[in-house]
Image 1 (cartoon, rainbow, N blue to C red):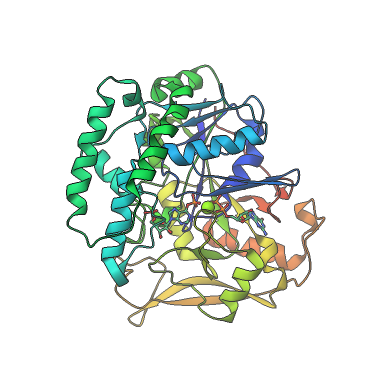
Image 2 (tube, rainbow, N blue to C red):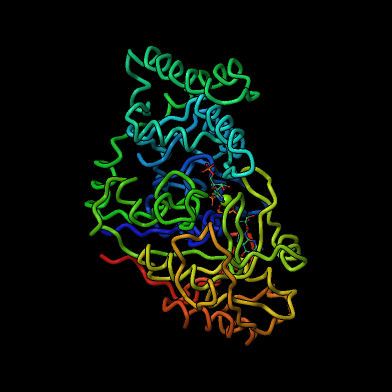
Length: 429
Ligand code: GDP
Ligand code: IMO
Ligand code: MG
C-alpha cells in the first residue's frame, strides 16, 4: 500500500485537522511526521470542539491507530494535557496512540531558550509560538537531543541534567527573560510519567510493516509549506520540513511509498507571526476576513493576518509537494464579499513574474489581482458540488485552471459534516 499525505499549502491553519478528521474513517492509521505543539489543529463534530497539538487528528475515530512519528518534537507537558482532554471526553487512546522512540523531546529549557532568543531579536522576531520548536530541532541536528526512547534508559536523569546545564550557559548570552524554570521542570517530570505509560514503537519498522500488511495510512502535516525550513519565507519559518519530502524523513518511509498528496488551501490566505505575505490586506478587507473567518490562532490566540488567495504561491507549493488533489477550506467565509480577488502574478522592480523571488523578505512585491464576482449568499445546506452558486463554481474553476490540479473537496464550515466531496481519488496500490 501507499501512504497518502495531507498538508497545508500556505502558512499553516488551512484546516488540516478538520479534513484529516473527516477522511480518517477511510484509513487504518494517521501519522504526524513533523512539527510539534506549535501546531493547533481544530476538530468540530457532534457539537464538540477539540484542538490537537501533538496527537494526530484521527484519534476520535474508533479503532484507528495514531502514530506520532520520529520527525515530531514532543513536549511531555502539552501531550499530557491533551491526553487529559481525551480522557475527559471518554476517548479510548491507550492502545491507539503510539509514539516513535526516535521522536525528540522538548525540554523546559528549550522553551526558555525560544523565549530568550525571540526576546533578543526585538523588531526582527519570527513571531514564534514559543513552544521550544527551534531550540529542540537545533539540538536534534546538533546531535545533543533527547528522544522518547531515552526515557527508559538508566542514564536519562544524568543526560537531562547535562543538557539543561548546556542550555543554562547558552541562556547567559541573552538578556534576562522571565521563565519559571523550577515550576516548569516539576510539571515536565510529572508529565514524563504519562509518556512512559504510552505505547512506544520503532516507528520506521512499525509503519513499513503496516504498509506491507495492506493498512491504509494517512500522513498529517503540521504548519504549511510556506513555513518549511528550506523552501518557506526564510528566516520567518518553522524549523522542520513541512513538505511531502518531510513524510519520508519524519516517518521512515521511502519516497516510492507516497500515494496521493492532498494539498489544503483556504479560499483566501492567512499568516500568523512575522514575515512576508504578498497578498496581505492590512485594511478593512483583511479585518472583514478575520472577523468572518474567526482568524485567531488555535495555539496562541493571536490575530491572524489575512489577505486574498495567492495563486503563484500555491503553484510553488504544489510543485514542491507533488500535490495530486486540492481541498479548499473556508469557502463560506467569502459569502459576504461583493467581489473576491485572487493574486495571479507579482510585480517586482517593474517586472511581472509568477515565481517567488529568492529575496522575498528584502523587496516590495506588488501582486497583480483578478477580481471575481461574489455570490452573496449562504452555502448552508448545500450537499452537492453542483448545487453551489455559479459564482462559487467559477471561482473554484479559475483556481483549478491556474493551478492545474483537481479540486476534490470543498469545506463549507468548521464541522466535520460540512465537507463537499466532489470526487476523491483513492490511494495508489
Ligand atoms: P489547522 O492548523 O490547519 O488544522 O487549522 P486550524 O484549526 O488552526 O484553523 C482552522 C480554523 O478554521 C479552525 O477554527 C476550524 O474550525 C475552522 N475551519 C475549518 N474549515 C472551515 C470551513 O470550511 N469554514 C469555516 N468557517 N471554518 C473552518
Ligand atoms: P498549524 O499546524 C500557523 C508559525 C509561527 C511563527 C513561525 C515559527 O496549526 O498549521 P515556531 O513556533 O515554529 O518557532 O514558529 O511559524 N507557526 C504556525 N503558523 N500554524 C501553525 O501550525 C504554525 N506553527 C508555527 O506563528 O510565525
Ligand atoms: Mg492551526
